[in-house]
Amino acid sequence: MNWFTKTFSSTIGRKIIMSITGLFLCSFLVVHLIGNLQLFKDDGGAAFNIYSHFMGTNPVIRTMEFVLLAGFVFHIWDAIALTRRNKAARPVGYANSHPEQNSNWSSRNMGLLGTVILVFLIIHLYNFFIPTKTGELGPVMIDGMEYDNLYVKVVEAFQNPLYVALYVISMIALAFHLIHGFQSAFQSLGLTHKKYTPFIQKFGVAFSVLVCLGFAIMPLYFFFFL
Ligand code: HEM
Image (cartoon, rainbow, N blue to C red; front, side, top):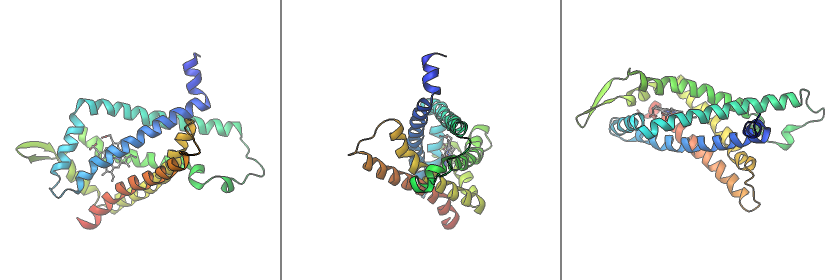
């Protein structure tokens, strides 16, 4: 095993990869949320369809899709590897352990929260991302040009109460996952400082709540107001 493989398959190496990929996925969430805000424009979906056409055809964005996929794969892979290593190191828990007294609920349930997010992601990609690649979306004319009508697909999905519930529950899970994950990433990267860490923790909470609230409002808006 060379030093590279050795370093990145060690516990600390895997934690570093999880932190970097986690923060990278956070930046994706911000871009995705800002892009999706086009859904709120009162223009019959024109801005949103033009935006998703750009995202689906721009070569830089298309290349970033592979980086994004790699980010998800490494993040999930390392999470599984670390969980298995922790379990193998301590198959029987401490007799006198009271984890609820020295850690919070989300930090102890990152695996469960991550699994909810993964299930959400699979359903989400199947519903919205795959149709953009298979040519099954209906056409719409905007300013004399033909676009795929992804807007109608989103509006239709959010008329279904099951999808709305799935999105809202998943965004609650994502919020808890991020609240712990954000500050934990800085800790694993060794970026702790008694002056800045309290700010990073507060920023992490505000970031997680705002981003997830932004996503959750979308299905609720289409279900109740359209
Ligand atoms: C209500 C909230 C959301 C809506 C309306 C939404 C909508 C969409 C749509 C329409 C697409 C397909 C094409 C495009 O990029 O424009 C897409 C792709 C995608 N979404 Fe979402 N999304 C939401 C939340 C999320 C969340 C919370 C995550 C991550 C946990 C996520 C992850 C992705 C990924 C990875 C893709 C494929 C890559 C890409 O196209 O950039 N989405 N989403």
